Length: 634
Image 1 (tube, one colour):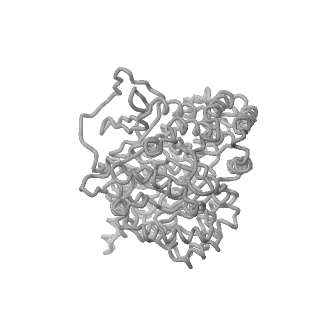
Image 2 (cartoon, helix red, strand yellow):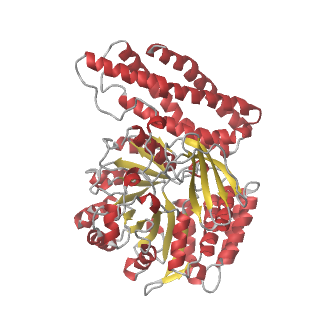
Image 3 (cartoon, rainbow, N blue to C red):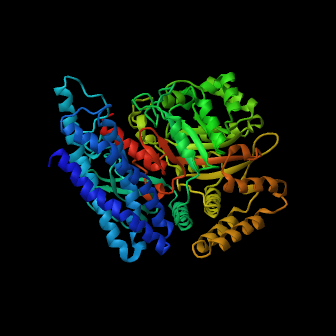
C-alpha cells in the first residue's frame, strides 16, 4: 500500500473500530459495576490512547499524506510526532497486559474485549513496521529533492525491539523457550515483565525456592532472565501475598513526578535520566497547570535531571502551592548550598526537599556521581537546617561500593541537630539511563552492583541488629494495610520502617514501642475482610491499632502517632511528620530487570515529561524511556 492508502486503512479500519467500541466497553464496565482490577488499567490506557488517536488524526496523519504528495509541511516534519507515538505504543503494551489479565471480569464480553485488544496490537504493529518507516523515508526523500536536510531527531526507522542494545553485563546463552521448574520451586503468581536486553513485553512470574524469591522472565529472542527480589523467601512470599490481597483495587494517583528538564550541573555515571545526553526540550509551565487542574491536595515532585537549573523554578513552586498541592523539590543540592538561593526556595513555598545524598564516603561519590560532593552537601544541609525545610535524604546504595553507608546515614540523621531530616530513603542501584554503562573503580560494570529494597533491609539488619528483618516485614504489613484503608496507591517495591528519636540524639526502633506482631495480625484480618466489607475492615484496623498502640510506653507518643495517621488521608507532607520520628524507606526504580506489570499498575507516582507526556505509572514511564533510548541507539 502507498502511504495515503496505509493512512486511510488505519483510519477506516482500526481507528474507526476503537472509536466505536471504546464507549461500548466503558459503558459495559459501568453497567456491571466491574471491579477496579479492570476499570483502573482500562481508564489509564484510555487516558493515553484517546489523545494518541486525536494527535494522529488531526496532526500526524495529514502531515504524512502531505509529504507523500510532495508537499513540504510547516514545522519540522513528522519526527517529533512519530517519536511520541512510538513512546505511547510502549505504554499501551503494559496497560493492555493488565486489561487482558482482568478481561474475565467482563463476563460474556471477555472474548470481544480480547479481540479489540488484538486489533489494537495489529494496528500498533502496522504503524511501527510499515507506516512510520515509509513516512520517514518519504520525508528524507522530499528534503533531498528540496536541497535541504531533515532536522535531526532520534532515529525511528525501526522499532525499538529490532534495534535494542544489550546492557554491558548481559551474557549470551542458550535461548530458553519454556519455564523450568526444579524441585522445591513454587510459583507465587504470574505477571508480565520486560526483557532486560531488548526491553520488550514478555511473560513473567514470581517464584521462590528455599534460598530466594525472584522475578523470572522468558523472552522469545533472548531467553530466560531473573531478578532476585529477596534472600528471605518466606518473608517475601508473605508480604507479596498480603500486598495483593489488600491492593486488588487500584486507587487514584496522588503523587506526580514532573520532569522539568533533562539538563544537569553534574554528570553522574549512574544518572537514571541520562542527563545532558539527549536533546529533550524543557517542559512548559502550561503542562504543569494542565496536570494540576482538578487535582487539589496531591504531591508534585519537581525533578528530572536537576530542576534548580530552571530560571523559573520559583514560579513552578508557587504554581504548585497556589493549586493547594505539596511542592517537593528533588535536587542534587549544589545550588541550595548558596544561602540566598535556598532562602528564595523557602520563600516560594517549597514544602520538602529530597536531597541526593549517597553517604559521606567521597570515594564512593566519585564512582556514583563523578566527583567529591561532601563539602557542598554539608553546606546545603546547613542551609536546610537553619531554614527549617523538611528534608529527605535519597541514598543510592550500590553493592560493593557504599553498603556501609546504610547504618552510617541512619546514625547521621539521628543526630539531635538533624531533626529537620524526617526521612532517609535507601534507593537500590538500578540499570536505567547512564547507569547501564557505568563502571566501578576497578573498571568492572556496575550491573552486578544492583540491589532490590529487600536486600537493603538485609544490610540494615546486619549493621544495626536492633532492627530485625521480622520487625520490618511486620511493620510493612501494617503500612500496606493503612495505605489500602486510606485508598493510597503504593508500589510493593516501596517499603518502610521507623525510628523514634531520643532528645539527646540517637533513638530506638519502633518495635520498642509498638506490638508489631499484633499489628501484623490485625493487617491480616483487614486483608481477609476488605474485599467483602471495606468499611468494617477499616474500622477494625484502626481500632486494633489503637488497642495495640496504647501502652504506658507509647502514651507520650499518642499525639504524634495521630498526626502520622492523618497524613495517610491528607498526603505525606514531610513538613507535617513529627520530628520525633525518622522514617526509613527501602525503594527502587523500576528498570527492565525488575519491572513487574502487576506491581507497576499500582506505582505510587505518575509522571509528566516533555518526551513521554502524561503517564499514570512512573514505572511504566521508566521502561518506556529505556526502550526509546535503545531505539535511538544512545
